[in-house]
Image (cartoon, rainbow, N blue to C red; front, top):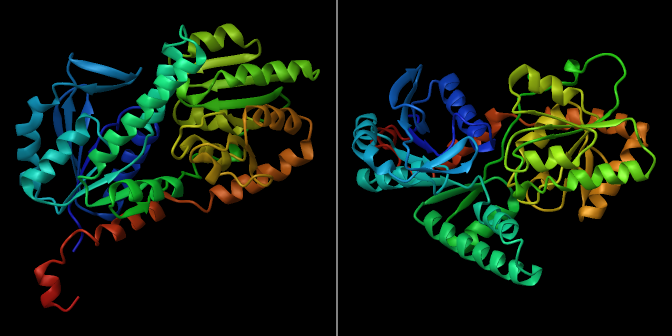
Length: 395
């Protein structure tokens, strides 16, 4: 008997890794004919259905605070509690799965308690690290030592609070092995690996345009402090100092660092948020993908670049280092200096570029969303009681 999953996600309609994972999870359930209720924040409150999936969009009102330009958390989300509870009760879930401690996650945790069903939680974003990076930037008027003490303390307290929230769940998921180990240690709950997949038919080298173009260094993601995007300006400076002129940056995304990047990069195009086929073509036309973030738990965009046949240069912090086989599909840099050096050297080594392009595509094609969610459903068995009829049937 398939599990009846009620999925409460803090991000679905936006452009980020959590939203992508949430949309693919719903699609997986629909394709397999699995019962699935997806509750998410939206511009308007409405219900819907598509195949085996039911949806409940809850309007985020004016008393919300912005986590990003296109992502908010509603401080008055509890005004929707009756509608959400009635919808969940009529659906009769076997479990509630939440994506984090945001507005929808809190609502989902409460509903799991009200309905007396197991709560499952997946960790998608290192919010505590985001807080530390942003606070460090905000307190730039303070001495560096003082600034770091304050930011580090805020980061530790934020992680402790988040870990306490996750301890409510009976089963946890995390996108990389470091977080799996850390969350199990801090919560005492079983934690399973929940990576992310890639659509290798959408993101493919075949969409690369014919003809010559400047060496293209690409970036896709939020343009914010925790993504360490200002390092791209240092990459440009190093390329110019090395005598390179025929290159360009294509920096796709939006965020608080957009204005700074426009002012400090001479060879850059910043088209904003790009989606669908246009994004797939943009990836395919890159020569190297530069991802300087140290706070990402996984890095969907890195996987999309690899599927597009683009070698990736990433840092040794966070989850992307698990996606890149250094020297084969790209390079993992130990620090900022190594990150800059890797891109400068790769630009001059066409043979390495071609070798990595082929290996990157081959590796990415081995990772599918279906495998990710099949493992999630297998793990659900540890918290959902065996149905009586299954016991009677000897299953």
